[in-house]
Length: 389
Image 1: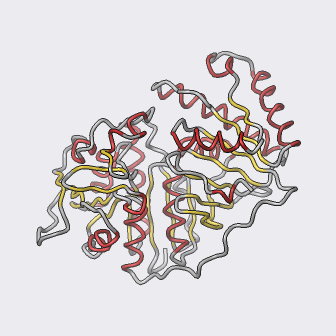
Image 2: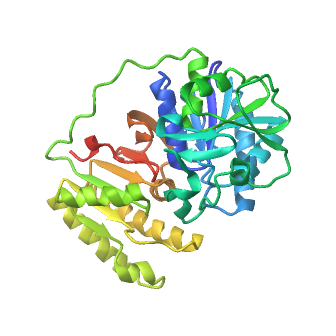
Image 3: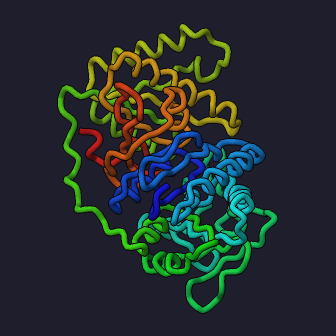
């Protein structure tokens, strides 16, 4: 990778896309990889390890592979994207990255003050509320049970401490979590990143790091135009978050067809393939009549990871059948695990950033013939009005 390049790792696809969009916003060509074998072509390359929904041992193994990938990149800046509220196997994966890179320290700044997500006095708040009293407490895979940041990080082998930017405290070996409640705090922490220190955190800290390296914002692009009357959009919702429920209601309010997983498919693991085909044909018929169609789970999912993956696989089945017919001009996916399942089902392994519609809402072009653009976002972010037309 050429001098000045940036390499980053994320544990889910929407996080990887969000980082790539931050780099694009700062003038970098950026791409997302879902496998380690592709050579980087852009100044910013982000690898999705797809590890957040795996078990801990698998997440550790994927992080070790990511460490080898990072070491081979020889980038000027290495970054580990973590979920802004520390869901997933954040501590185990950071420890594996440090060991694989041969480094002893990591600075983690997960706060996103621009979204009202801040860390003060060792505790995490979302728009003024302790994080464990928000929608994140109902996450089906990694529910947040405490707002104490060290408790959120979990136990591990490396030492960990929460540090305020105020004062001369040095960054010790192990894991340092930087408190942050403003953009100024992020900028201050960015100024303390040096060689041999693994920088980690959310998207806003990554942006502060790029700014500290002299990368200016692009000239503001015009707002996305409303979709044309002949364009067909498929929305895929694999989240049961408040934002996901609001999006479904917005679609219904506009008269767009919503096609949830049929009840029998939701509950029964042994139904024949033609039952899935029947659901797909119903979706395709709706696509032919409406400029936008939504496929969704649309009901609470059990905490069984296998059940969640099965349902995401059903959504991916329908998307694959729609794409094979070349029936839509663009796909919109909310939920990192769902987006990853869809992309891997379609065999897309490298995607280039086309535009950033809003923070965290990113459009990418798959490196595959005749593939439609794909726009994705985390389940906890809202769709901007522009996508609905």
